[in-house]
Length: 154
Image 1 (tube, rainbow, N blue to C red):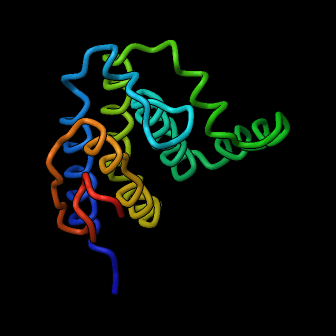
Image 2 (image 1 turned 120 degrees about the vertical axis):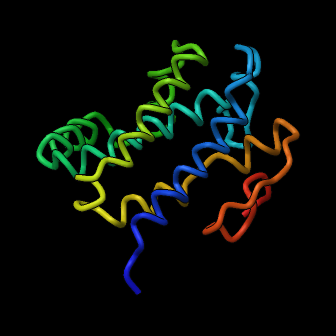
């Protein structure tokens, strides 16, 4: 069955809106609430999403630059999410949220839709909503394509 890119993009937008709503009102201390990921806080999760959203777009729209960056990372010991997270720990919550918004907007680029259907599928499935909702005591919200509500284990 072919992927309905319009529906998939809408699902990603819904997931992003839920995540954004969970973190938008946090003060700086709230951004540093620990998550179940050892050594990570909410800020790290949002920077992880923003970084890998940007890399996802780059891999589809500028594969040569993506390959060069990947080769550089591999030469430096490999792609390590913890090392990447440390690089962005100096950013404020507002900066991280703006970056997350811009990176998610990039996933909606029409050229990306044409270039990489499977990338949007991956991004829609990879959301920190369950952890963030649990940590912040928010009610679970079900997005149309998710099998479990955002805010519940899944």
